[in-house]
Length: 337
Image (cartoon, rainbow, N blue to C red):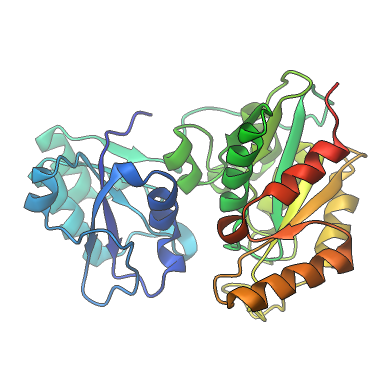
């Protein structure tokens, strides 16, 4: 899948910033590809890049309208269709990470066919995956896991990829969600894979590798989330993780979209070790990643120090304070062979 850049980021009228996390992820990690944003009245998200009309975006060289939003069920709101059709008519391709395929919407499919534009459904793939086998394979793998969904699992592995490469380690980001695929240009949206093949898909995108090579696998959901635990478990088994980093957002009291309370960090560590040992008995935690965006700097540092002391693991906010401590722990726990 080759998506033409640069992008015009479509935010629609999302109610909060988390609903536009795909757009934020692309902007944060591929800022040179994001020329402008297109928002509808009532939109509560702002990428901090210029708002543009379609003619303005075309004049700036935009080639693809990226639907940079997520929502429960991955649906495409009816009132967005006319905006997408207008973009196609103006001469843009369209890329989406939603579950609903763009081509399944008659008005969008007809406009694309008439104008000869490309429709990219990043969440879907034509590749067929095997069932997972759980057989030990060469190379090393790190998985991010969470107390909830949308807590920073993708940002953590992307920051680790950068930090580990700066230390001279052989490390690659493996995308398992639509935003990650937009950022890396490869991977698979695991939550769109038929359940029997989730672990096999993860084995496929993280195949056998050189002994010191690290695949940094983007986690999804949480083993404790009633909506997404199945995806998280398939990822854990397919990753055959040697190491994992627990990701957390400290201001929440319930998990996103449900009334269930957040688990403790220790519960997350214990359950991931217990279940992950099925495919890798040596699985171990190597750190804690905390999204401290809602906290002041002194409060954030105090919390990280407290968590590190409680769990005997390095704790950081990768965006705010970097990942040096996490890389130190990985290097110490996994010397090169």
